[in-house]
Image (cartoon, rainbow, N blue to C red; front, side, top):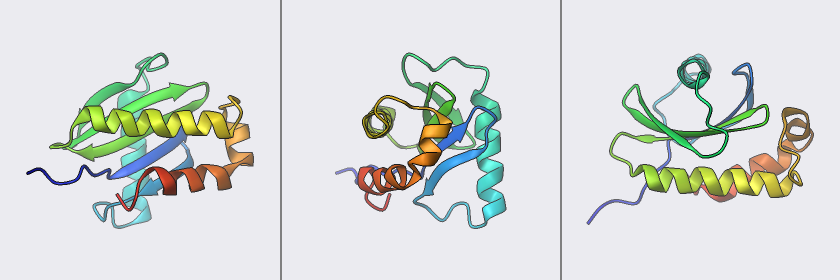
Length: 130
């Protein structure tokens, strides 16, 4: 019997790779600098792709990362290399759809920053402690 699927982190970055909203559910990045380094490398690895219509999947640094871009926001869900990418993609889709509803389909950096409390609430609700 397999264990419960787990998410390592959910990242929302802007079009320059800067943090908008991030939530880490694992201790694999113990310091702020290690988290920022991970975010930067994920952004650089994926910025040349066009994950606008549907989610893309990439193996990176021993993790499976499912990601999607909506306007000037980049959404990422990270799981371990044993995770099922379809489940990670479902988490990404659920989270990005919920953010779209909360922001009344105005999914851009400015609106996201104005409604950061809703986005963090959504991060807490979508994933239960990882």
